[in-house]
Image 1 (cartoon, one colour):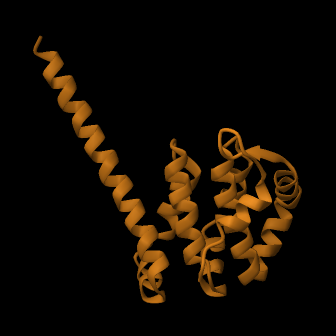
Image 2: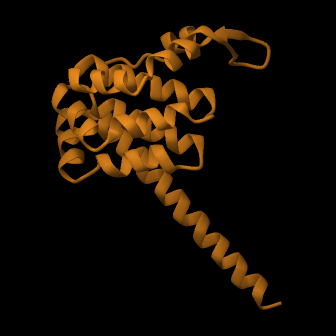
Length: 165
């Protein structure tokens, strides 16, 4: 009987830790989107490697999306896109994209690939070397169920979700 309260305590502690981590990840996304000063602080404080690790190793799609969005927000100039690339970001991003992840995760990663390629020629070359173009085109050519009864192409979903800078 005594082990049940102990197990509940462990479960509560684990849930609290995961909730705190999720909140922390979301705050990093919010701060990264807010302004260039926050982006600079995130980079200076070593925020890129944990975001790449989260993108690569997270078990929940929500965490992967949070990481991809934060990296997308950080990668809006050549310098920061290159910093992401320098942290082995290109291969990590391609690996995360290539997994059998839910489509919403792959869409967030596709946006990240596009952003980094747009601002940094080195990242663009790296994605080319990793042969990410064919999987991107393949993903964009398929149809996907977005809502229960509504069929939309992935490209139309991408257009709807374009961030406003």
